[in-house]
Image (tube, rainbow, N blue to C red; front, side):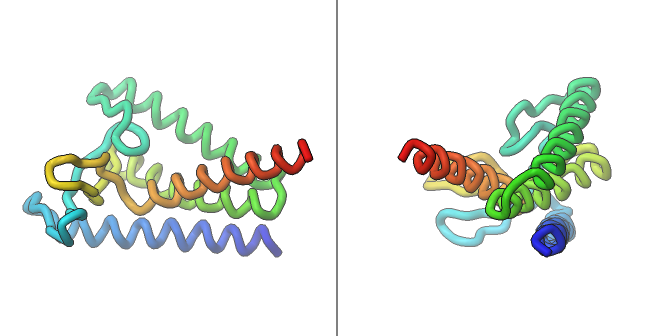
Length: 155
């Protein structure tokens, strides 16, 4: 039952990510930034690297290598998902839903549309998207699970 719930949740994350990216692409055809408040702008940036624009290269060979590594990581996540306990399954679900959203874009556009620009005055964080949020939450959750279980095992 948990596997089915996780698969549905992963699909919901994928769809939520797709809808937000479609909306931002529709609204930003003229490459205009959308002011949300003093700390957030919606500004379309095409990312050929990995999360948060890291390892952003224009080389086709490096891009395809990164995409291949991402596919391998997704397969590894699926294997870990099926071998994990309930709480870990939900963490892997978040990561998988986000990863599928970003890999879809890599295949369709040869880049991932990032658009959430957090900033304080002129200091900007990496631009990211909804998929990146779920991947990050899933990774943090996995780390917390490991730290908690490791601490409990010591006691």
